[in-house]
Picture 1 (tube, one colour):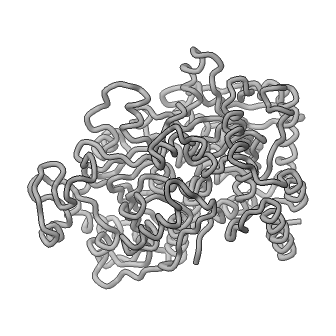
Picture 2 (tube, rainbow over the protein chains, first blue to last red):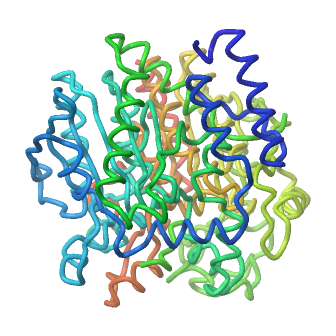
Picture 3 (cartoon, one colour):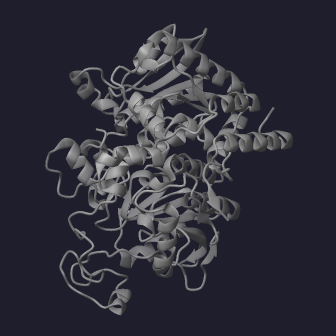
Length: 317
Length: 278
């Protein structure tokens, strides 16, 4: 059933009311949840309680856990084959963003994902997972390829934010984040994004303008890091926990706000406890999301995607 | 890394270090002026050329032909979807900002004529919570795109913003793809988009609709950066180039089409609008 049909809209409203009641939260008007009702229903059952400040902070800690699986850990487990493509065809190859073509359940998909480093040396090489303009240009090159050759696009998001460096600024960081979003918004092929760790601000949303946006259970998605917010509003980085509770960056809140379309469960204790299990659940989640938006009508898909993002926001009139 | 700030609102160099000095005192050369003197010079220091911040309604008066601006969506207001509370409630900050500025939110939009050319005009105001973009700003901008598309006229936007509004959490981040999609719809309708970036245009606004304009004009000395100099300095711990992130540096690296002093802005925008109308 489509969420755009009158009955769909009505049922969706009922579900949203139930969601709000379950969570004991005010019903948000003007927020659209796109997607299938049964999926929404399933997820309502998953999130029967509003996460409290401690649970939100636990998600922040797990999302940044040093043993958490990173993008390439999933790539080698989810795909049968992966050929990495390098470089932005202009000035460099960003090691913090990996991209290529992959084989997923018997078909070719295009892939873009942000990669953090494991040890200090690798972390530095990968700029702590912070993408530069070179990375966004590489992503755009892979998106264009996906569109032309009709491959679905998968993206995995895991970044504290876009790289705050002199050359990144000189090379137009803000402009490339904007153009990367534009390119992704315009794609005619189905797109699925999943936040697997930190979804840090503009650096994350640049590759998250997808038909289906998922979050792993313990991932966070936020306009600013809790520490950054605490410094600005509380003038004290030590208040990060309070800031996190206020920002509500956890998956359950993001789902309730209509920002994401689904939550991908993690093994007990978090993804870091069981890489195989986490990868299996992520692969299943991505496959299910892809099946929902698969099909040939690229113009309709573009329109639906635009409508979904243009609905986002809560305001009074 | 964790303490990195995307949405900081920064001042450096030519800007006052704190709120201590009088708003009519030039932070660059210390000259002091009466309001009527600065009105005369469009709030540019006659002595050293420093561009003072301009309030949104004042800017509309400077740019639009007299009596042609028709404001739209004036009643649209921010909600408080997260029930956000830091040291104060978000609703309280909103009410204070409205009282202090006389604006409903950080962006005013409507139809206008500039040098006898019709356009949609959207102007941001840094005085309203640092010009930050929440749901209300995103929606008003997107609707301005739609009206420009419907009327087949160009969109002119004047930006002044510290970025996304933290108090709306993830919803404010979603205003980036939302406004990007709105610009895409504007492009599909074949309407042109001119953006005047003023001090400061940073973070979420630079990383969304502002950078997607067909013609980008900057005011002299404006900070136009995704991440401001203070945070970049904290990260790399090196001395930054003297004009880091400023309009002049952006011009050298090819990110803006022109740096236009305020006194020449209206005729410049008029010329571009005339050419864009074919």
